[in-house]
Length: 364
Image (tube, rainbow, N blue to C red; front, side, top):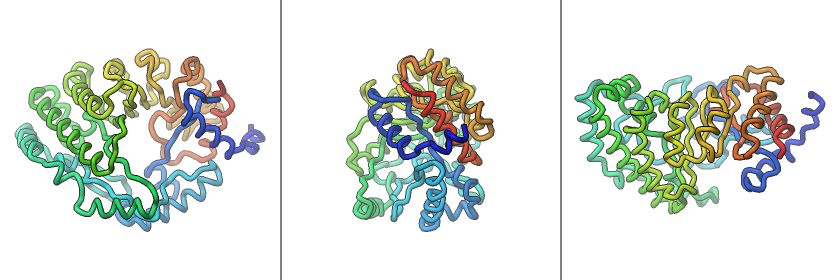
């Protein structure tokens, strides 16, 4: 195996992989997709200050370039953005809805709730109703920064096709414990919360889409905390939220309706299937055969467990690739992917082995 890995042609691999992702119906093998996030970066470079990373763009750019130089040598690709100027960001939706944005040294940004009880929830709903997204969604200097960014980079910003999901936004805005309590004891009031949350998210995305001239349909959701909801509660509280979002921004079932949730939320897969979710990236505890049975037409991104990729022996990583191919390869409607993000501390040699295994064992 070592000899084969030494001879592994990374340039050829990525060229074929890009072709297979972009021409999925004509793919020559199952493609691989994975991303390296800020958690991975901090461990990879032993970053001195995470707060500075998020607040000092020159410092962030320096770290991205340093990481990319090392990654390109082993994995054949640069993973972190290196735009010479920072892309402008809209105001965070959850913050507009009442959550508090917190930065702590050594960690990634966090959203915390200031809601303590149902009285606070009722007051929050009143405040949410008054938010004017046309005035609140964007910082005052957004347009100036957007035009400058697009001029310097040659890239066009397209916003308004992604958000976190209703369950995860609720835990950020209301608190995880409160969300669970309100779900069981104050369902009607929580239903009012989700209704106004959805209304405001639609308004928010419309502002983003108009400002960035985005007329592309399709919507993606990241909803790790949906596993907290029993099916009946999810069906009543969260499903109508998704239904309205998809109707607005992905009106045809042919449009992308993607959900990432790296938790064990297999009890909700049937509901998501009925909502027309057609691309999924679920948690590592869910077997690929279970996903395929529950969602027969969905494109599955999975199901390499991140900790197997980080800590597993070569034969264990290879066996997961073979397993995924065994249960999903017949229809070929899947992309080999980690079931969640790549865990911090994952050796680059393991990631390269993962790529090699897909190249060898996922041929069609």
